[in-house]
Image (cartoon, rainbow, N blue to C red; front, side, top):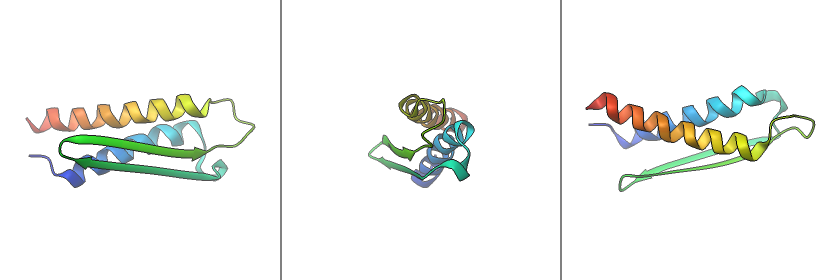
Length: 81
């Protein structure tokens, strides 16, 4: 059985990893990754204030980070079976 805290931590780490692979942490004005897992529903909310002179599209990076969070949690549950 996978604990709720393990799910939240796994999702948050995956999302942050994608964001920080696109932007240097020192360049970010603000970054907030909020993950909840209640009643078997994973919610990932991301706010990022990237540098204005960067090529990466912030919306695409956020979408990729959310997808990575869900995929990481899926893998976590698959490995627990």
